[in-house]
Length: 128
Image (cartoon, rainbow, N blue to C red; front, side):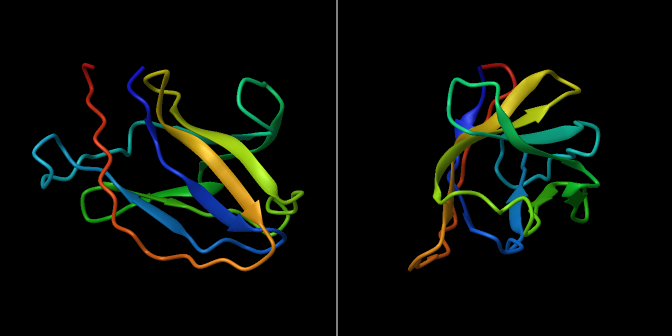
């Protein structure tokens, strides 16, 4: 399993602020073209369940961009964010490879929140 953990947040009932993920080769500077990976982002009620709240796909919540197709933009609608506040679980899965790349908690909140922008590097290796 090559997946890595990244936390996601959204405000209940509101269209999300787009979350960009940028992918690079192992050298950390060369863009990694993700345009052929056919990503889907599944949001589940909790870990270890098959009950999906919603699914994002390329063209419907997921957008590939960037000058070298290295950027994945994640956006959810207000209707998708219409959840009971709490922490759920998500997986970003490549149907092309049949591998999960990123997973982790997906928190829907209503109250006070201080979204401090932190640049985080997560390394995912193809052969590990």
